[in-house]
Image (tube, rainbow, N blue to C red; front, side, top):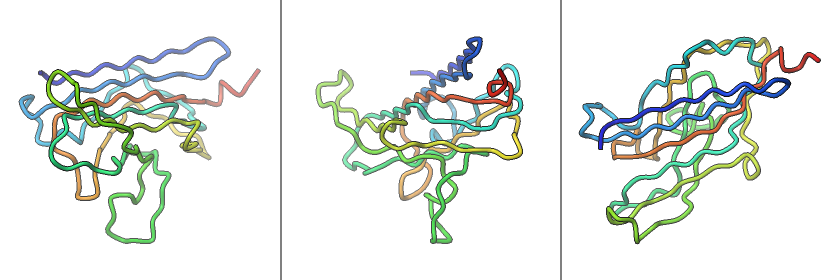
Length: 166
Protein backbone atom coordinates (compact mmCIF):
# COMPACT_ATOMS: atom_id res chain seq x y z
CA UNK A 1 0.00 0.00 0.00
CA UNK A 2 1.42 3.41 -0.92
CA UNK A 3 1.06 6.56 1.12
CA UNK A 4 -2.15 8.35 0.19
CA UNK A 5 -3.49 11.78 1.11
CA UNK A 6 -6.78 13.49 0.36
CA UNK A 7 -8.04 16.88 1.58
CA UNK A 8 -11.50 18.22 0.81
CA UNK A 9 -12.39 21.77 1.81
CA UNK A 10 -16.09 22.50 1.43
CA UNK A 11 -17.53 25.99 1.86
CA UNK A 12 -21.30 26.19 1.74
CA UNK A 13 -22.85 29.69 1.54
CA UNK A 14 -24.02 30.88 4.98
CA UNK A 15 -22.40 27.82 6.57
CA UNK A 16 -19.09 27.06 8.28
CA UNK A 17 -16.21 25.55 6.31
CA UNK A 18 -15.92 21.76 6.52
CA UNK A 19 -12.55 20.08 6.06
CA UNK A 20 -12.23 16.34 5.47
CA UNK A 21 -8.70 14.91 5.73
CA UNK A 22 -7.86 11.33 4.86
CA UNK A 23 -4.31 10.04 5.21
CA UNK A 24 -2.97 6.52 4.75
CA UNK A 25 0.64 5.93 5.81
CA UNK A 26 2.87 2.88 5.78
CA UNK A 27 6.52 1.99 6.33
CA UNK A 28 7.02 1.19 2.64
CA UNK A 29 6.27 4.78 1.62
CA UNK A 30 9.66 6.11 2.72
CA UNK A 31 8.29 7.93 5.75
CA UNK A 32 10.61 8.18 8.72
CA UNK A 33 7.54 8.08 10.93
CA UNK A 34 3.97 7.17 10.02
CA UNK A 35 2.69 9.30 12.88
CA UNK A 36 4.00 12.70 11.73
CA UNK A 37 2.96 14.49 8.55
CA UNK A 38 1.84 17.82 7.13
CA UNK A 39 -1.41 18.30 5.22
CA UNK A 40 -1.40 21.38 2.97
CA UNK A 41 -4.60 23.25 2.18
CA UNK A 42 -4.79 24.59 -1.40
CA UNK A 43 -5.78 28.04 -0.16
CA UNK A 44 -5.24 29.59 3.28
CA UNK A 45 -8.05 29.53 5.82
CA UNK A 46 -8.21 33.14 7.02
CA UNK A 47 -9.60 34.79 10.16
CA UNK A 48 -10.33 31.53 12.00
CA UNK A 49 -12.19 32.04 15.30
CA UNK A 50 -12.66 28.36 16.16
CA UNK A 51 -11.97 24.84 14.91
CA UNK A 52 -14.17 21.94 15.99
CA UNK A 53 -13.34 18.25 15.67
CA UNK A 54 -16.55 16.72 14.30
CA UNK A 55 -15.17 13.18 13.99
CA UNK A 56 -11.82 11.42 13.92
CA UNK A 57 -11.14 7.77 13.13
CA UNK A 58 -7.75 6.08 13.33
CA UNK A 59 -7.18 2.46 12.29
CA UNK A 60 -4.12 0.26 12.14
CA UNK A 61 -3.41 -3.41 11.66
CA UNK A 62 -3.40 -4.84 15.16
CA UNK A 63 -0.21 -6.18 16.68
CA UNK A 64 0.22 -7.86 20.04
CA UNK A 65 -0.24 -4.60 21.95
CA UNK A 66 -3.39 -2.51 22.14
CA UNK A 67 -3.24 1.13 23.22
CA UNK A 68 -6.10 2.54 25.26
CA UNK A 69 -5.91 5.74 23.24
CA UNK A 70 -4.14 7.60 20.45
CA UNK A 71 -3.10 11.20 21.07
CA UNK A 72 -3.80 13.67 18.23
CA UNK A 73 -1.51 16.72 18.05
CA UNK A 74 -2.19 19.39 15.43
CA UNK A 75 -0.01 22.50 15.44
CA UNK A 76 -1.94 25.61 16.58
CA UNK A 77 -4.79 23.44 17.88
CA UNK A 78 -3.46 23.03 21.42
CA UNK A 79 -6.33 22.27 23.76
CA UNK A 80 -5.23 19.82 26.45
CA UNK A 81 -3.00 20.91 29.31
CA UNK A 82 -1.22 18.61 31.71
CA UNK A 83 0.63 19.03 34.98
CA UNK A 84 3.44 16.72 33.83
CA UNK A 85 6.39 18.43 32.15
CA UNK A 86 7.32 15.50 29.85
CA UNK A 87 4.08 14.13 28.53
CA UNK A 88 2.63 13.16 25.14
CA UNK A 89 -0.78 14.50 26.21
CA UNK A 90 0.54 18.03 26.78
CA UNK A 91 -0.64 20.56 24.15
CA UNK A 92 -2.55 17.93 22.21
CA UNK A 93 -5.82 18.62 20.42
CA UNK A 94 -7.79 15.45 21.11
CA UNK A 95 -7.65 11.90 22.41
CA UNK A 96 -8.95 9.07 20.21
CA UNK A 97 -10.21 6.26 22.42
CA UNK A 98 -9.93 2.59 21.57
CA UNK A 99 -13.30 1.66 20.07
CA UNK A 100 -13.07 -1.91 18.83
CA UNK A 101 -11.01 -4.61 17.19
CA UNK A 102 -12.10 -6.11 13.89
CA UNK A 103 -10.86 -9.69 13.83
CA UNK A 104 -12.37 -10.57 10.47
CA UNK A 105 -10.47 -7.90 8.52
CA UNK A 106 -8.94 -9.36 5.31
CA UNK A 107 -5.39 -8.45 6.37
CA UNK A 108 -5.82 -9.98 9.81
CA UNK A 109 -7.11 -7.83 12.63
CA UNK A 110 -7.58 -4.03 12.89
CA UNK A 111 -7.76 -1.73 15.90
CA UNK A 112 -10.10 1.25 15.56
CA UNK A 113 -9.90 4.46 17.62
CA UNK A 114 -12.52 7.22 17.45
CA UNK A 115 -13.48 10.64 18.74
CA UNK A 116 -16.68 12.58 18.04
CA UNK A 117 -17.80 16.06 18.99
CA UNK A 118 -20.96 14.66 20.60
CA UNK A 119 -18.85 12.63 23.04
CA UNK A 120 -15.88 14.93 23.73
CA UNK A 121 -16.67 18.53 22.63
CA UNK A 122 -13.16 19.09 21.22
CA UNK A 123 -13.01 22.69 20.01
CA UNK A 124 -10.33 25.41 20.05
CA UNK A 125 -11.16 29.15 20.10
CA UNK A 126 -8.87 31.91 18.80
CA UNK A 127 -8.79 35.50 19.95
CA UNK A 128 -7.36 37.15 17.94
CA UNK A 129 -8.28 35.06 14.89
CA UNK A 130 -5.56 33.08 13.08
CA UNK A 131 -4.92 31.93 9.51
CA UNK A 132 -3.69 28.47 8.47
CA UNK A 133 -2.41 27.05 5.19
CA UNK A 134 -1.48 23.60 6.51
CA UNK A 135 -2.15 21.15 9.33
CA UNK A 136 0.96 19.59 10.90
CA UNK A 137 -0.28 16.39 12.54
CA UNK A 138 1.45 14.10 15.02
CA UNK A 139 -0.11 10.86 16.29
CA UNK A 140 1.27 9.38 19.53
CA UNK A 141 0.63 6.63 22.00
CA UNK A 142 1.90 6.86 25.57
CA UNK A 143 5.40 5.81 24.40
CA UNK A 144 5.83 8.41 21.65
CA UNK A 145 5.10 8.97 17.96
CA UNK A 146 3.51 5.91 16.38
CA UNK A 147 5.42 4.03 13.69
CA UNK A 148 2.95 1.50 12.29
CA UNK A 149 0.85 1.45 9.12
CA UNK A 150 -2.32 3.44 9.67
CA UNK A 151 -5.29 5.30 8.27
CA UNK A 152 -6.45 8.60 9.76
CA UNK A 153 -9.64 10.43 8.80
CA UNK A 154 -10.51 13.81 10.31
CA UNK A 155 -13.63 15.91 9.85
CA UNK A 156 -13.14 19.46 11.09
CA UNK A 157 -15.49 22.43 11.14
CA UNK A 158 -13.83 25.84 10.81
CA UNK A 159 -15.63 29.04 11.77
CA UNK A 160 -14.22 32.33 10.50
CA UNK A 161 -15.09 35.96 11.20
CA UNK A 162 -16.98 36.04 7.89
CA UNK A 163 -19.21 33.18 9.10
CA UNK A 164 -20.29 35.28 12.08
CA UNK A 165 -21.42 38.22 9.97
CA UNK A 166 -24.93 38.13 8.57
